[in-house]
Image (cartoon, rainbow, N blue to C red; front, top):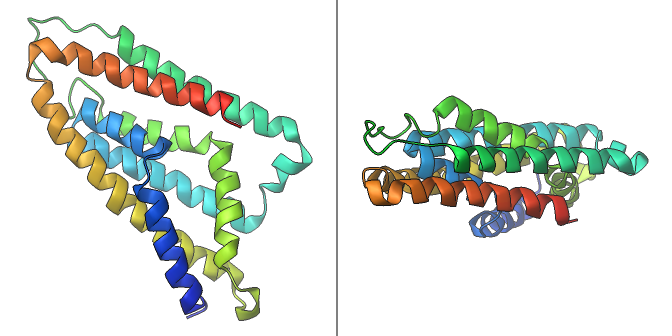
Length: 211
């Protein structure tokens, strides 16, 4: 195996600790699950995981050097990601649902699985902090003396994505169960939409101001 066993163990433990600490990805998946049901929560996780695979590839190829060579590129991508999150949040808050309308089942009428997947992928792809984090994090657990650096990146990236599914996927599914129950209560259904939209707006603002 082209990865040092001790480094692999340390990477796994460190990644688990980082994953279980609530962050933007977990909160985003939580919001999708609450609004669209377990399937939306799981597909939002798949979208985030897909973007993480891209980040790993970018880190391995060294393309993130662009942010160091052109500082403006970092700012542009960061602002685009923040604007997209705020847009999602505002759309949720503005959405009107009549009390007399038929209540949707999980994954219908709230946030579709396709939208959850696309939003998770685009939001994470437009977050340059995820790229820089990947570049700063993964190389710490790679030993160039073992050779096959690309394969080492691939192994660590696969573990990262697997843990993403296990941790955030569980959060999304559980949030979907709770959200499905809430959406069948007229008195709190609107509050769920507003709270979830506010969550996304908050994440967008945090991404914009947190450097």
